[in-house]
Image (tube, rainbow, N blue to C red; front, side, top):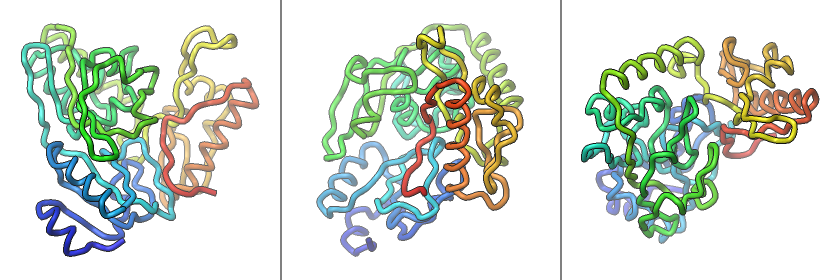
Length: 311
């Protein structure tokens, strides 16, 4: 897939690169190239980008910050559109907040605290974009994004835009219907519970300190957060329980494959050491799941997405 003069004419304000190394666009810093990488479109421009890619018959994927992705060492065959901005696009009317899907989730959490627009402090420190957070119903400390969402503006893979209310997204634990449809969140509106600014700031400070003590800083220790979802209630497990508990009990703490190892403070997080490959991460995750299956008879479900070919 090559950059043609037509593409440059169509997308004059965008950054377009061929054979872009995707390790530069995920928090794991792993992965081979994609044939084409497009960056820089706003939510208003994205429908036209998608329509043009479809007309040119270029298969594509849309990613955000790449905070829960492991890209194959061989790369992927699709073009990648990176919908992620470090400039927040947020509007608020009392406790109703509308935000672009490419806004970073922590930027939104900070905005709601500083402007006292409602309590979203539990999202503090979670990497990724708002759009990605909605697709995966991100959350922490017993709360999740679907709890407060009113509606979303979605872009279909055909380039068409539609407004969708909360109930159509079929939110569940770490899941929404968007995981099946592949639709892209252009913007969303939340109605947030009221809280005093000082209380929200104190909670944000507590959460940020907790993350600092228990989770790796992906800037220094590349990772993609929790590898597996927590365990849903079953006949064997009466309530949702942290996957890390089962992994710890299964003895995975010492597991290591190549440059992939278990984070010393959290049995459900893999970090990339020197020389780590995406294949190392895949194989270590397989060993982790197998250990829990053998000891507890529980099938862990991945929270991290693996894209491309793995052995």
